[in-house]
Length: 353
Ligand code: ASP
Image (cartoon, rainbow, N blue to C red; front, side, top):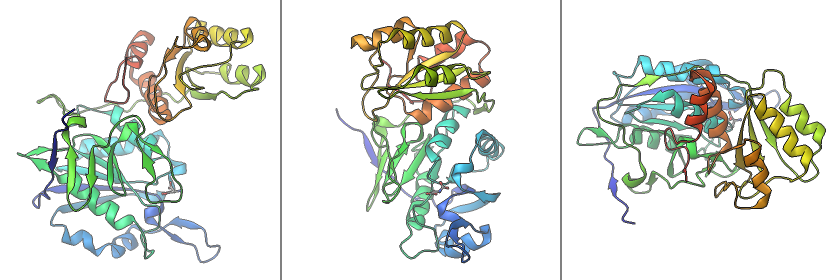
């Protein structure tokens, strides 16, 4: 396939809104016990005088107190989405500074919440705090700002919710945190990179989604958190499966299966799933493998799942299916609409068919 690519330019007159939520990028060591904890927003700016040299008009909004992203919940996704909505006309792009631990969940949730997005929303962070000599914070942030302002003929080059880390730009709802130590913290196992940053930033337009011209941004932030993950392993007991499928108020389950979407063939397992789907609980089949797709019916071991009413999650990430379910359960008028939208890709989160 011919890949249509282009090199970006920094648009000096552009304006970027920086939304600070926290994460290692904004932490320093607590002298009392050596643990990393969030620092003041003012101190963060002191560490990055380069921000003034970008030529881009940057305004920042800190969400105080800055948090470790393990404390992120849907209220933060709503706050980011509405902040973008309120400031949408005034800025060319948005950069969200966020901890890496749950960044892929936030990027996925925002991709669903920001419908008809026509401007870049770039999430980034760092593996080492900004105040440390070898920190990756500056490069990540400065490149994210450049990407958020990149345009061709006045049109944003990457009008998507993305994660930029180390040297790669990923579609946000395709990413997973893969590394807790090295600077290349993220990967997108089932979708190609949208851009690579070296001497130049090279954008792969073939893989970037461009919205229909003229459709206005719609921000939808209602979520329903009654979602659970049921991860299979050899030897799992019926007590474990039943305990999860009978959680009071449960609306949907992400069933993490083996290989191409396979599961045990024992009757008790099928029966538990069937009883749950008969009660109206949605169950989505997501493979435990990072790369590849669920193929229901390829092996005998997934035929039972189909007859129990389990839906395919194709090649979606866990982060994207959890947030897609929360979003659809919160926003859709009825279960038919939820099911219909689960079986299609809403914003490039999965490859169907
Ligand atoms: N625990 C941190 C967080 O996710 C890790 C990081 O930022 O890299 O907030």
